[in-house]
Picture (spheres, rainbow, N blue to C red):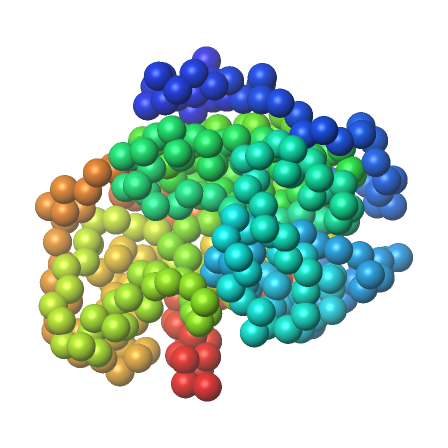
Length: 358
């Protein structure tokens, strides 16, 4: 079995679970007929002004798993603002973003096949965006069983349920499926994850492709943004540290593609409404190392960059290895969805600055 395949990777050897044998949620095979063929392409007329696909109505539902998270919250907000779909949120924890407006919420654990089956059977969404995941890279390294359950089993349950009811699935993944030796990477470049997190997400991709072949997989990285109901991310944490005058060590040998959560939500919505099929890289337009990105954050937010100290990744002694020369290419996204903006790091930070000033 290739590295990162559907069999549990070596890090999960004692956790003997084969994705191919995961129970299918108790849904009737078939479900409603989809009016547009899976795999079609589409585009959006402008950021934040998304029109409905031909024949669609506002009554059609988009289920967003991980709806309490940063991306989930942005997706709910975008659906409500653009009238592209009626958002339905699902999360393991009670709803934390009622401030967004009126939408339905279901408290559910996506690794529970019965619960997932019942949810999809009741909601019957036209689209599902699966953002729920265990994304703490070092936490995954320390708890591989939890990572496998959350990232692989959860994705397999959602994918099987989507296929059964005819919902189009967009599954979130990561640049950590690559080893970071020869980035930036395109969608067809060989994968070779070097961490438990990366291996679990690659296995999740394959579980989705097996159980819901028409799905889209959206790989992203270095996600940042602000919502009052979610915890800090790299950018908001760094802003707080610099405003407090605290010294901060940032690695200068780890390169990625910083991605504004609002922009990623636009990309995911485009993939859903356009019924995209296959892997897409959905990230910001630039590749930056963390130290350079930190200096740009200081510049945009008028903070003192002298508190930033460049260090090597190895010096941090983190539990999980990181892909160093990574970052993702967005040529395919731009080709298939030319109306969807792909923001550079400075543009994204300016959007965030305006949001924080409101």
